[in-house]
Length: 301
Image (cartoon, rainbow, N blue to C red; front, side, top):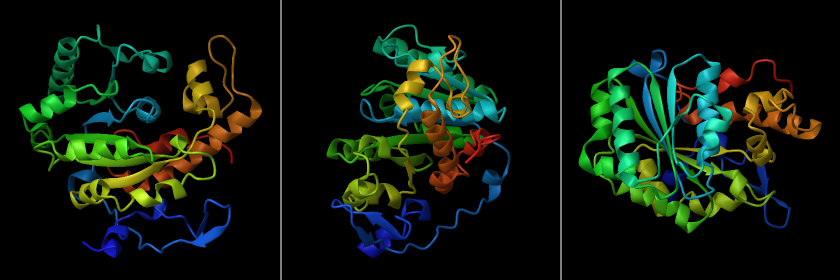
């Protein structure tokens, strides 16, 4: 496979627009990429389809941030999504979304049994399910080895979506290789998400240049994965500490204790939310269960 063929798979929202800063702060021409046709067809043109969503990544990769964002989008759109915080050592989801389902303890068998029960509920019900595991938790890989989970869900008219949060590190790329090595992923939807918050300011796009054509990425794209980027959100930690949703933070709302973001961080968060539809455009048809646009009402540029 030639490099030209590889680059052509990168969606427009991942190009550096016309230019991007290099390491010296100068500018350089970016390759021109043909837009990808993400026209909806068949079942994907229907209303939200129930999805089993699993966030994947190393520690501090942005899994919980992504999980919170998707839960919030589903809630704002009044679409049913049942979320499980499967990391008892870091129960941040419940601080923002009180209806998040906790796991009793961190024992691997407990997490495994809980996960099976949640999947059974998804198969029998009409709500999507999000599972937010701790870094290195083997539950989902165990299940993928035990059965064709993606195929089972597809036969029931549902989907398995694996959301891989990545930084510009070789260890992050190994996450892709790990899941590519699992059997029965032909019917899974795999999202590769570059997290700009994991790189120094000003180097967000350039930091990932070398990894776009790395073997694990190329193989994932060949198998139908889609590539998106999560823009940096500077006040993410502060929003998390305050227990605010992203939309409340962007609107300057206070938490139960009367605390809110400062004016600058409020505006930064609002502008971050408004950038998300373009960033996630390549998977808009996969996110019918949690449309990003549902958070944009009443926001001002």
